[in-house]
Image 1: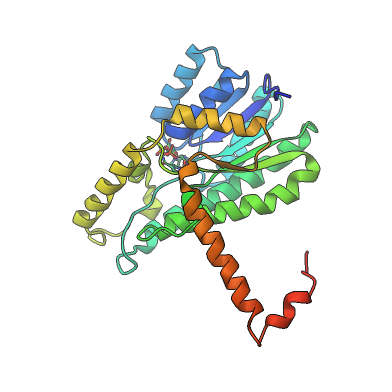
Image 2: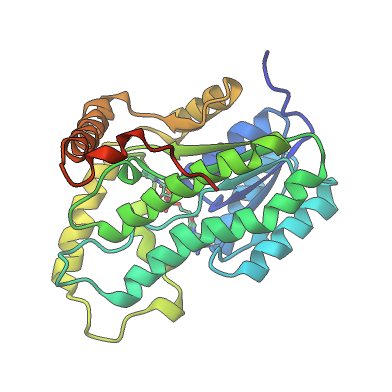
Length: 294
Ligand SMILES: NC(=O)c1ccc[n+]([C@@H]2O[C@H](COP(=O)([O-])OP(=O)(O)OC[C@H]3O[C@@H](n4cnc5c(N)ncnc54)[C@H](O)[C@@H]3O)[C@@H](O)[C@H]2O)c1
């Protein structure tokens, strides 16, 4: 049976452009009220204008996802304006800076962790009481990445935070199921957006000291990322795929079936590691022990 989204409310972070805006539009066209939240207020106002012209009920909420109090204000505004909150989409994310281990800058690594990981925690923590409050159940969609399913050389901060988002989502799936809150994790490969230009949103608090970043290397990385992103699918296609997956209750939302062999290869390597452990004279006997759970 098709889900009736009409009259329900979604709060979407990073909704001023890219994937967030496409999701806002797709859900708005299904009759949802939308709170578009973003750090980029200029793009945010434009996005709200575009959606309103399409007859979508929405408003803008200025939000830096690394600030918990701003998340609390966004949730409060959603509930005050629309009477409740049914869906949270933790979409805001940054690509970070690619480079070797030796070139890694601690400030920009922390930026990626704070936006991509802590931002998702803060959003979920701020929104969960409101999602439970309606008593009607709801949805949390966390935007991870195919990078969360495997390591990515020269982009360890991005891959680490996206793997964390997959893991957080899996934990919350079980935790929130009794409240009829469906948690999904979206793992796209490349999508045509401005993700390769994420540095435009680098907050002052994460700006590295002058001269600590090699601009030549930085530009090389950015050019490569731009070409990959340009080869990606459209945000409209991605948004329709998300709706399709939500309609059929999928928890893991994949958009690129061509990555299946890569993920299968990782699963096979993990399985082989279990086999090695089972064959080990040291720990093999643990095979019969019951798994301890919280
Ligand atoms: N584009 C891809 O190829 C791709 C692939 C896999 C996953 N993703 C993920 O999709 C999500 C959306 O990214 P996108 O591709 O649309 O990129 P994008 O750069 O086009 O959009 C990101 C949005 O997040 C906002 N944002 C950045 N920092 C923020 C902060 N601190 N607080 C609030 N908003 C902030 C930006 O202003 C922008 O509107 C990200 O989580 C990204 O990691 C993207």
